Structures are given as C-alpha cells and as structure tokens.
Image 1 (tube, rainbow, N blue to C red):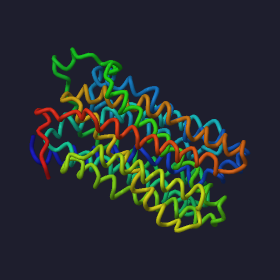
Image 2 (tube, rainbow, N blue to C red):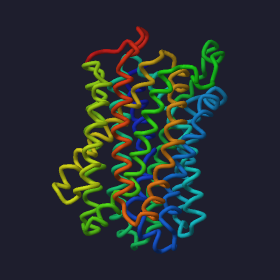
Image 3 (cartoon, rainbow, N blue to C red):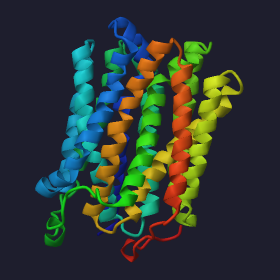
Length: 396
C-alpha cells in the first residue's frame, strides 16, 4: 500500500477514535444543571452516561458478525453515521426521552465501532501496532477531554442553551463520515470468513483481561459523571470543580500516547498496569477523604493513571492473537464484559449518593475497585502471552 494510503488510514482511524467519547463526556459539566432543569434524580440522570455504556457492552459481540456481512470499514462508517445522528438529536434534546434515547443510539454505534477499530489496526498496521495504538488511544483521550472541557464554553457561545452545547459534537461525526467514505472496504479472505465470529469464552486470559477492563471502565464512567459534583460538594466553586475535572481529562492525553509506546518499547505493559491501578487508588483516596489537600496534584495524577490504564487495556487483545477477526473477537468480549458491568457504576454511584447524602461513600467504593484492578494486573503479569511472530512488532 502506498504511503499516502497509509496516511489516509491513520487519519481515518484518529477521527473515528475522537468521535467515540464526546457524546458521553460532554454531559459531565452540565449534569447537575440538566438534572435541575428537567427535575431528574441523580440516579435517573446518570442513565445518560450509563445507558450508552451498557449498550456498548451488550452490542459489542455483534461487531465481528457485522464486519463479516458488510465489511469492516463500511460497518465503521455506518457507526459514525449513527453517532452524528444521535448527537444531532440533542439539538432538540431538552426532554428526558430524547436525551436518554440519543444516549442509547450512541452506545450502540460505539459498541460496534470499538472492536472493529482494533481489527482495523491489526489489518492495516502490522509491524506498527504499538505506535498506532498510541495514536488511537490518544485520539480517544482527546475526544473525551474535548467533550469535558469545551462543552461548557460552547454552551455559553450558543446562547447558554445546553442542548445546543451537547449537539455541537455532531459536527465531528459528520466529518468522520465524509472521510471514511474514502476508505476502501476490504472483503474478508475465505480463510477469515470461515473463522468463528463468537467470543473466546473458553480462554482464561480473555476472562482476566475482560475483568480488568470492567473495573477500569466502571471507574472511568463513574468519575466522568460525578467528579465535578464531588468537588463541588467538598466546597469548591463550580468553576474550580470544572477546572479540576478538566485537568483529569487533559492529563489523559500524554499518558494515552506515552504508555502504549513504553509498553511496546520495554515489554512491561503489566507492570505499567499495576502502577496505574495503585496510583488511581491513591488519588481516589485523597479525593474521598482529603479533597482540599493539593487537589491539582491528585487530579493530574488521576488523569494520567486512569487514561493510561485504559490505553494499555486496548493493547492487550492485540498481543493475544494474530488475526484481525480474532482481535475483534477478543476486543468484543473485553468490551462486552467491561461496558456491561461498567455501565452500572454511574447508576450505583448516583444511588449511593442519594442514599447516603454524600459522595464520600461511593468514591470510597471506587478506591477499592482501583485496588482490585491492581491485583488483577498482577495476575495478568503471570503467564504472560508472548506476541506472535506474525505481529512483527518493532521497537521504536
């Protein structure tokens, strides 16, 4: 393939990855305002985050089958159409039904696109997996950070209308659709088409990887939904709370790129996962029990560790097999378990907040989850799966 074509493929991957997060993280700066204006409880408003994550889990297993039916690249294009359409609906989303309905469509589209983008990397970037995954995870972090940081200013610029502030992210989706129309839709080979499209339920390492991702995903979406509210409850102004949350999201950018590169360069991905888990637990402990002590330090460290563990999770299935379809199957199982269980966390956190009257109890629970995540990373480190020769991984 010509270099220009590789460039097009990488840009298409980056734009698609950016589109996977703003529809979810853009709600965090506005969640309390939306709950107040629509008279919703914290448990119900948390569905705007929990529902897409649940759909991302339940529908992920269908991704390999759709790729076999209509092609991997065209399936991804269709997902971008759904993302852009769901975000456009939020332009008239000043009602609970439209807000939650668009969240469900977003989740369905992201559910299918996620596993297939991993297969896309395996298909088109053999020998450059570490570097390309670094760009992939960085792009998702950029999308997540942009949604969290820029939605409030966008809302103000658009007449202080929160539905417009949420819908503005549809522009990125339409850009992605136009770009992916130029990506060739390669048909699966006969050998690949004959492979099973089911999930690797009988693989113990697939269960370990999926369990780790479930804890990581639950933490991310709970933090994305309720951290601003926790800081505000602890005595910070709404502006300070949003700034601290912005730090968490922005610090995910360097770690999303750096940690996959380090994992490939030094073959230490499981050690890095353990460090990320322990750091996340420490930061959550500080936010839970001493939120006023050096809050910027813990926000920066939390963002770096949380995004780093997510980026490294994306790498894991790529080292377990050498077939693009198999990578999609492993990733689909990881996302199915991870997002299905992770989707419960924003709701559980909101329920615990309503029950206890404080965010301290749910954040203490999240700290315990981060500790368990560290233990699972230690189990993954034993019996490490070696990369197959077909991956042709290069040190960079």
